[in-house]
Image 1: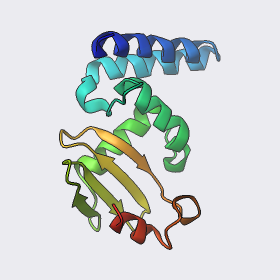
Image 2: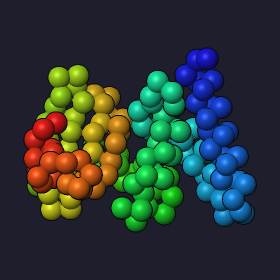
Image 3: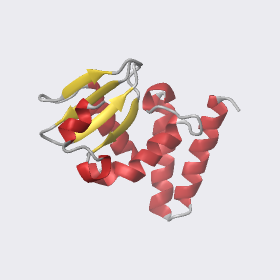
Length: 143
């Protein structure tokens, strides 16, 4: 299956899942799917071997959206893109050997990674009890 076909299929799956929730869920699903189509999938979010950029962005929203007060997946994705592409003052940055850009802002405790094309890979608030490093700065430096 090509990535374009998979992206359309995943967008429909996400939309259908949200439509089953309620009228508000249907509106959210349709809004995210429509926005994702217009946003250009290559820069929306990175894809994985098993998921498209749309499904990956939605999964990250479900996992981390509440940490940022995101109203929906579109809001979360826009926040991630803004942080990664135009980081606020005080944000630390490093480039991995594969070209990924890793960013961490100690003031807001925000961590994110984008690929060399600017598509987010992840965006979250790190927690030493989860990542196992003594501090979030140590976690960033280990990247």
